[in-house]
Image (cartoon, rainbow, N blue to C red; front, side, top):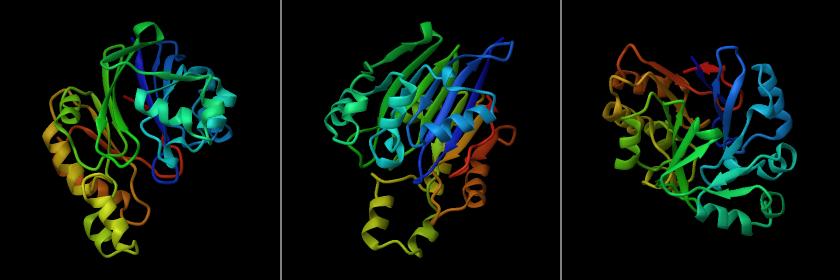
Length: 267
């Protein structure tokens, strides 16, 4: 029986990059995806190797949106990994026009269709859904890996009914828990940035994340990972303690580290 493996290489405004893949019984990765390109190829190779993985285990790259912390290393990853990069038609157009990425992105850029998209001979299926965040377009992903149901949403100003519906069917969810309201209100950010973060098209607070988890917790859910924690307006302890009461006690809740890799989780 196959296992599902998940790892975060970086999660936050410093950079975002995640791996999700299928491990066969003999321990090898049969199929895998990289989500977002906020880590350069040298660091990525080092982090993969530390977990017993390599770039040959990445079949494709998915992008959530075009903010710098998610696409900072897109050009170099295209150059050195030479893997197809999948995103929506809207984001594909923006990246194809960008003077920073277009030359390296052009040979590898691919457009996801609406609905389910098949990868790796159908062992992985991907469905994107739009999220409210102030980029050109921001999406989350529902991913089926040999039937295992995984959802990732790194930046969202507020939860949507569609996002909740995917989470309510998921075995594991990665969801943003960006800031503590009190820390943001009394912190060093200028007022316009505080409004941008907190008014529906920026980021999800700890309290909003906890409300979402309470809404989508269900019997089949096994794990929730808290991502994109703010360095200035949050702590892992605050994010965890805010959401822990919303999740059934027998289920795993993990705040992902910002600038260092997480363990390679078995889901």
